[in-house]
Image (cartoon, rainbow, N blue to C red; front, side):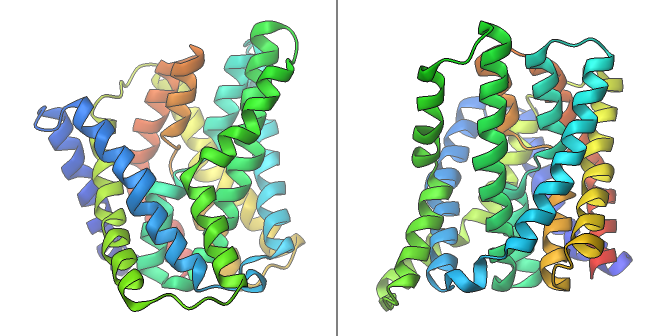
Length: 307
């Protein structure tokens, strides 16, 4: 495990550097927001497009892998929802907690880390995890919050869901890359160099942005943050591992990638959703902070195990 720790340490060191920059105000919240926007819309999208354009859909699509990840995720989602109902939380707060329990930072942390640690072949499984998270669970939380706050489901809210997916640069980059690959269009050298240079900024930029954004997170509601971190870092990868290895017989490498994605800390975009709808942003903030700190050990252990 020590050897794996030395491999993962530079990733967490970049997060720590971003945290220091945000904490000392060397990087303001506004600067962090612009860096995050650059990574999200440009660097990470370039990386995803370049990898997807060099893959064939047959190499990426794996129904058993999707079903294994989805079933393990749904199980933990239901556990978190059940605990929320026992605690008599309202529907929006329960939905936000369940989202924290299963949606990890596969985009900003998982994609760059696994691509560097395991090579381009890791991109396909990670993209399937990202697509599942965005299409299924990002849509579900909007629906549940809307029903909880308004008492009904409006068509106006339903219309925003496909528009949100179409406007997501990771979905767009993934789709365009696979279309490019499907037509077997070669990537010209200047374009490939451009994408390589721009995509190369995704890893350091994303990790630094994670750290800088954590500096603005609070550590309130620690017992709840601890429970949600346990769900995300322990229950979620365990459920996906059982589903992938024992039920759906996913190939070993694909199983390893989805298990590692499930072991990622709570995703930062949940905080933006919670803040936008005014639903428990403090507990989401604490869950992101605590799970990211604990993942230095837990994620390293999972990677050591799957390796």
